[in-house]
Length: 281
Length: 168
Image 1 (cartoon, each protein chain N blue to C red):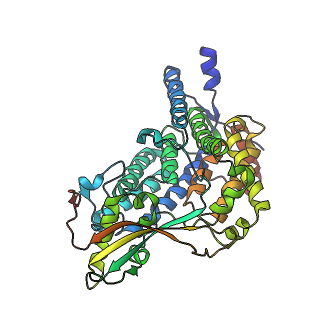
Image 2: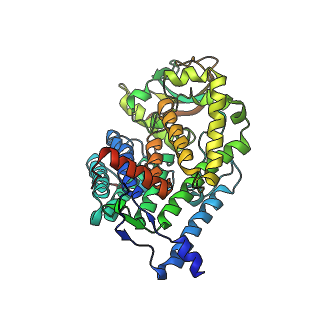
Image 3: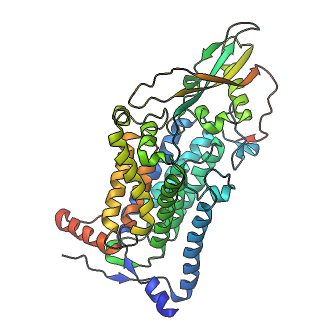
């Protein structure tokens, strides 16, 4: 057991956590920042108060625009504290969580995927070394990285396998033809044009299935890890270009510096240092 | 040139079994969340770890339209609720969200709020669900062969149970 634990907890290069911290802050700000445009609106509106959903907050308190604005500002402050790192990191995560979820509870719709993912990553960040400085000169416990890997195996794996097992239209390419013209999730003229050509949407469907279904197995394999993550990054860039799914792509990509195998990530970092010089603080 | 590693630490030995248990429990949670068959309603604590994104093929646009009836017997006129309540939940107005559409309480709230914003106050609001086929390849989606279903007829000024929360 001792040998297993020594192997399991062998320290790994921790530089990826610094990048993940900043990228998470950027993605969290994209999601939380625009909520200010919903004040008044779903976050401070006495006309349409929804009591369904998981929290039923409006049965206890209804936010005025001033209160909602203060809560929103608290969330932004939390994000800045996370970005700063150090002693403010954990408190910032908790502050962001309380403020963002207070507004979500007031809105009382079901929780969007990017809200959930931002929260799950925040939970892993709480137990990670991301609060430390100069992590590119350090090795730390891999436990938090394993948790992030498990989270993303769950996300990609479950959504991919549900597609493969339950919807045959993913195999003939027709499903994307319709998703790309969805009235609320479709992107733009590019998406509409692509949707009219099944010879394009079919390989896009296959790529999606291969990536999502294969991720839980391939991401643990050192050799396959970097190209797999590159495919994933391209997948999310494609989504950003052609669909409207909120900041989901940015939230997902925030985890990629840590999902990458630490040895590959360090080699990439060292190459970056040789080319660009000074590392960030 | 390789960045020198000057500081090496890992989980303290006494904490390692606990950390291992937590990582395994994390994995077990997501396995449990994945297990229920597709389409099965799951409790909130399971749904939070369940990821189902654009799984099914959807070939129909669905939206709601709100119509005001000025007085008994008058013809209904469309109200632009998208402009009246413009906040977009992610990529669409909140009231167009499927969840909203399926909640009678939400539709009643929307109807009464719309009544109050129209001068003079109409007699009745009608909320109609509309479905029409998607057309791949078209940026501006044609709205043809629309199927309608009345979701709610709401007499303006009807008593509406508001949540009891205190305004802060």
